[in-house]
Amino acid sequence: MQSSSPAGRAGRPRSAAADTAILAATRAALVDLGWSKLTLGDVATRAGVAKTTLYRRWAGKNELVVDAVAELFDELELPDRGSLAADIEGVVLQFAAILARPEARSGLMAVVAESTRDEALRERIRTSIVERQKRLVLEGRARAQARGELPPEPDTTEAARTADLIFDMVAGAVVHRTLVSAETANGDWVRSFTQVLLWGLTSRPTEPDDG
Amino acid sequence: MQSSSPAGRAGRPRSAAADTAILAATRAALVDLGWSKLTLGDVATRAGVAKTTLYRRWAGKNELVVDAVAELFDELELPDRGSLAADIEGVVLQFAAILARPEARSGLMAVVAESTRDEALRERIRTSIVERQKRLVLEGRARAQARGELPPEPDTTEAARTADLIFDMVAGAVVHRTLVSAETANGDWVRSFTQVLLWGLTSRPTEPDDG
DNA sequence: GCATTACGCTACGACGCGTAGCGAAAGCGC
DNA sequence: GCGCTTTCGCTACGCGTCGTAGCGTAATGC
Image 1 (cartoon, rainbow over the protein chains, first blue to last red):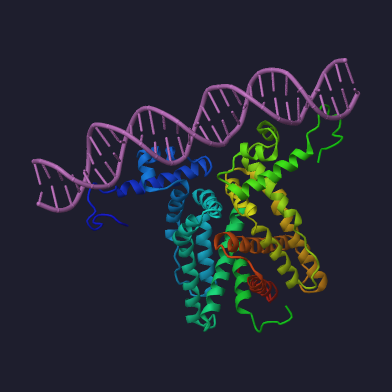
Image 2 (cartoon, rainbow over the protein chains, first blue to last red; image 1 turned 120 degrees about the vertical axis):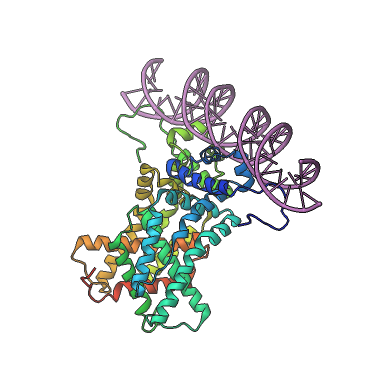
């Protein structure tokens, strides 16, 4: 980020390699120990840096784990698979693959839990993890509209609301299936889920006014 | 549970009032301090019992918080609101109301995170929290089938699979909306969600056998 | 009463937290 | 090359929590 030439910044620059090593060590510690038994001293030892170096860069365990887990979501992408159903299935499978990794399982839920009492942490999670996922929803919908699978949405407010709903349904279902129900989101499950979601979104003829 | 006459159990019986006080104190501590800053010594002080008494009944923080949070879900019920859509909206609103309470927000996600590395804890969560929710799904579907809103499902295996899917979608969406997106699951959102879910479930013509 | 179990209280070692202070290293401008 | 600045590794420290041991006391069943 602010490496090499940060505008007149004098003195010894921070080691970028240390950042990489620390985040990797954090993920390794998450795998071996889980969230509660993970200590910053252990992470520092694994990374080959001093504990003080770690504290100079991260305020605490929460922020460190958010950054460590966020890197796992870098691999999320949305290749054009030809249809909206295939696109949804693809991204859900990718998401499920990430959540299948132990460093994501224990780390992600823990920082989300902490974020309920820490607004700054919630914002950090939002920008570095959630927004990255949500972007795929918007991209997938735009692509489906271009294909004619979804009608164009003139009302931008309503469109944003629908995108939020879809996002909560997709991410929530996968997370719940994986972490609470403790079942793998395999191909069968993803197909069933996609079918329900897609029918729910597309076969809305006219809003029944009895509700 | 094993109160009053536990089959030849001699000696001074455990105080049931202490259990109640400890669990209430745990929820109060969750509200004031959140998960990470909650200490068992503080809970014992709040409950008016000795720390050793607390350790004689619960193995640790995880188990204690699970039991404390589980009591919040006792109030979940499914009154007959006349239609499947209304039933779903009702239970989703109830679930959202529970998740709006701070003691549930911070506690529930934290123990779920811990359960990724503790099989016994996961089982405890499942029996005392998750199954209680899932029962409502089964009850609501049976009621909808009796009304004729849903077709009877002869294949019990497929029926169980569908129930699991619905459960993950409902609970997952509400949890994600409430805790990750940090937005309240108000009436508008619940109606939109129910509409998508219901259309997805009912307007499935015949399952294509290509899957 | 007597055995049995739970309770309140105190004290303890162990451990992780987060910080301070030091000398050394690695950059930049001259 | 030389100084200035910032980072780094290391050690040490006070603090708080953990989880347990030990003891005397209280409450129950036989």
